[in-house]
Image (cartoon, rainbow, N blue to C red; front, side, top):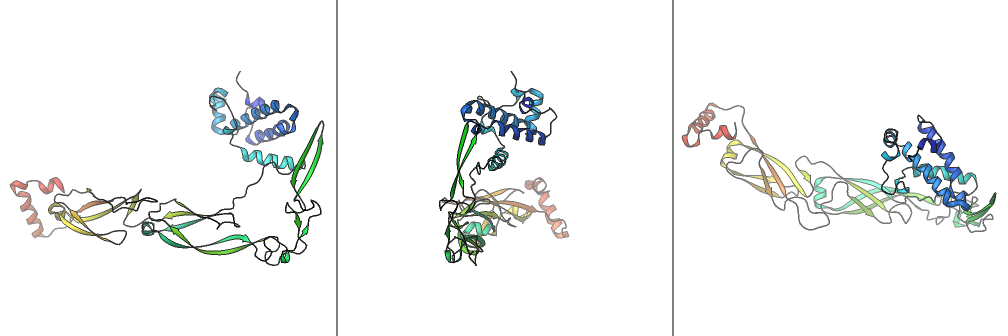
Length: 358
């Protein structure tokens, strides 16, 4: 039998997202299995069912498919819906944090704070080629050195009278035939186990201060756009890291594709016909001599092995590709015109310039 997601949530087929969310919140509080330990298995299935309906009806595309084809049209894999398909955990967290807080149970989800600091580093392509040490200046939060992180003046604290220094309080709630015993952070000391009688003057009782860091960061040769560099222990506090996102600026002469470099040079059509050597300053500053073979065509690529970018975290280099642009003069002197006509009329070279450059 096809599932009726609208009936499961108790909403009409034209219900708005706000109406769907409101219905789900009410049912989630009603059927949460932690509130029904005597029939936990049954309520787990019911909770899963309303969550499946919520997942479908809150997603515009899934709802459209369901309205057209029914539950069979919404594919959740061979085993059907499971929690790996659920994409609204933020809604659940908000719901149960508030729900269990109202009941005196504390937070339903343990909060994890990201202790890392994220910054960007802009580099020229030449910097990426050579790598090396780069100076980075940023601000971060760290333990107050005066109070050692306690937030108290001179580091002097007093044992919390509510939790007796444990940082936790025990709550017992009777709910019908059920008794809930929960342990939560002490509301008096916020889980620290101590209280502050006089705040530290430097950090104003926070236990942390903002400092300016000035460090040297090692940038590897061949670093790529989007590379993340990690400096351990330089994030928030002593346990967070500094994460640096590398951004490579566009170069006016060279374009990078992977480990290869691309550039363009322009030569007169006479040099393309006769062949020549032209100088090229590499991204590294090295002077290269590019050999142009006689009869080189417009747009032709010359490959120079090992003259690309250093391979990141590896050995060797990519290649350099030089595109040859052939310039044709718009204005000729009478002498130049006569010479070109003479060449074009040579029997053994008939049509040479027409075929190749005109």
